[in-house]
Image (cartoon, rainbow, N blue to C red; front, side):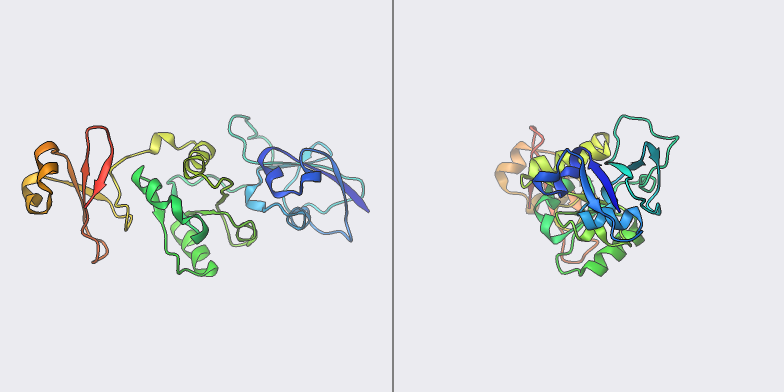
Amino acid sequence: SKAIFRFYEELNDFLPRERRKTDFEVDLKGKGSIKEMIEAIGVPHREIDLILVNGRSVDFNYILQDRDQISVYPVFESLNIEDIIRIRNAPLRRTRFIADVNIGEIVKYMRLLGFDVYFNPSLSIKEMIEISKRGKRIILTKSKNLLKFKDVTHGIFVRSDIVEVEIKGIMDLLDIKDNIRPFSRCLCCNSHLKTITKEEIEDRIPAKIKESYNEYYHCKILCKSCDNIYCRFSDNKITQG
């Protein structure tokens, strides 16, 4: 028995070059579920939003049949597919993240934009998935295998190696540009920043900065070791002290 698959848009990133953006035939080797076959091909199920089999939408439990024609789609940003079977869970109302160790270079930049990003490079995969589920956090990772774990409910495969492109891709995918809140989180511990007057911290501010700038923020030390002061420059840059 055989089935014919085609994957669309960014799902092709998970395929070998000869299978990208084209129909290809797969041996079924028994009657397994479509989810099992898709992940055997190499595409994590958390990246998928819609599956059509012979033009009809199905869920992951569909049992493949000989000569099935299968089209697999990623998340839709503008196409309304409310009346057919969506594979992904409903989007999270509150956008929060947990970053895998292989994506750690973007953490401070996302926090600078005001996004809640949990990061602990010593976490095991099991611990990270548990924190993701318990805190309803979206996993950011460059590991295809991590997104294949059945307990992963929300995850994003980060494709680029350029920080700016990575962050733009995440924001475009989730449509969260309106959620940007600069100078609201500590770059080190992810805690909320509070405004503080220059007079309260004048002994901690270098003289040149004290003379020129008046807007300051303080990390309210949710972790005992963090007591950072931030200064907002007129060009919206931030400095940490």
